[in-house]
Image (cartoon, rainbow, N blue to C red; front, side, top):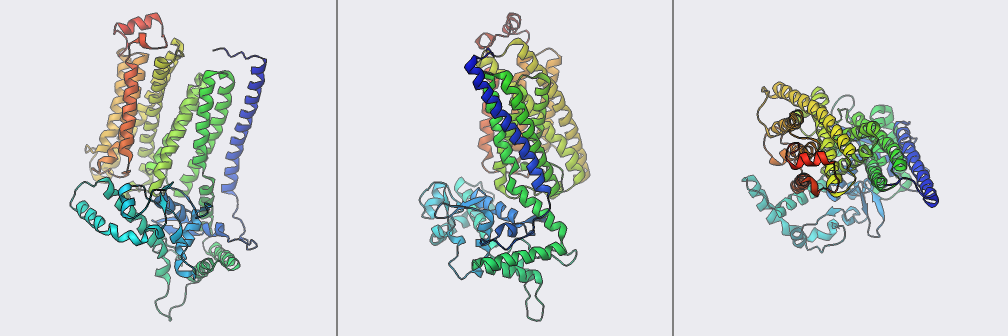
Length: 592
């Protein structure tokens, strides 16, 4: 297509360039602002506001599941589990932060008023059978309060008992029984929070264990009151009574005490609170989507103008992505990958980096597509996985080792990322070749080069990661290889990438064959990444995720369909890759 606009087109193009320049500048400024906010000194608490200072309460450090975190993370994590979101709306439709919901739950016993938390519509219930059992009518968002279903809770007691019996006897559970277990879990979270069974809020005097509030309350009058317990009682009582001056002064006094006794804990909790509020990964996700749209438009028109601007915005977004990844490493004290959530973030990071490198070398817009699609899809997957709970927790005790997390897990995850990038390149090759006339012989050769080089990296990282995994298994379980499903999945990636390389070296496939094999590689990686976890067997059977099986099947079918499109005879492709190549392929001499 011509890239020479008319005078009116030049004016439109100038406006677009200016807009993109502003967007790029904002992206870079956002990355700088994020760094400043995360690393700046803690603010001085203030009691001058006429509103409850819940923001300062949110940054109080506590312990949950063995990790120090702010109350803000406690609130967000548990509301996300119960409601699948980190905010809630009151009966008037006004949005409120998670920390306000947590305070309402925790202060029920300290409030003389009617329990506010029981009126908050935070429990997501969307299964028709469960809705019917609780006497609920479907509503927009499918979120209900305890008051909505409290009188009907006895109706699910017997089905839940039978579901537990079936589970204990090893029977497979139906969707309704799984929903009953989820509902029971959500009610349990609410109950534990309201009874202060979690988190552990009272720090030790020295190096001892943190305690919950009930554990720290003296059992008899002869034992003196811990000053931390007294501060908590003052804060919760004041909040329950909505006594603004008392609550704000109590929070200020407690933070002052913690700053004197545990300054490092307060600083770390503050950084995590700011990290939560910035929501860097979610912001980066939507910018990646914007960049995909810009790149797609660039393929249609104004490519030479849109492509460099999009690369600039993608680079700024990658900086945000990198900075957020570094913040997670600092806060968790772990290497970048410790669970499924962090693996999605790291796979996206590696794929975006490789896409930017490819774009820098080839300048075809393909690298921008790779970076934008990879960034958006993986961060969306991470967003879905975040509903399972705290995203910085290590799922299994066997993973609690810094060395192997930094070597084996990082290498194997980079193998996932690079194999996915090769698969995306194959998708671009097939889609452009079959459905558009834009795949010229030169572009086809460049895409094949990109795919080949990427698969070389993928084979290296997958092989090294698999060998390191065997060494870790030998160190932990006394055997190098045990044909565990996760081990088989990792080996399958190595073998598939090796198959692609050998097919290329042996002349069995050319550009088209490389693309088809790379697309099938997407199925192989998805199975190793998620599929083996769904089996629930083996020493690696951690990270099971409800509802992922259907998504895996849908992904596999879509990739198989694309690979099938790639097998269409060359004369059915809208792009003609040259008479010689077409003749060779038609004769079956050069391409699978």
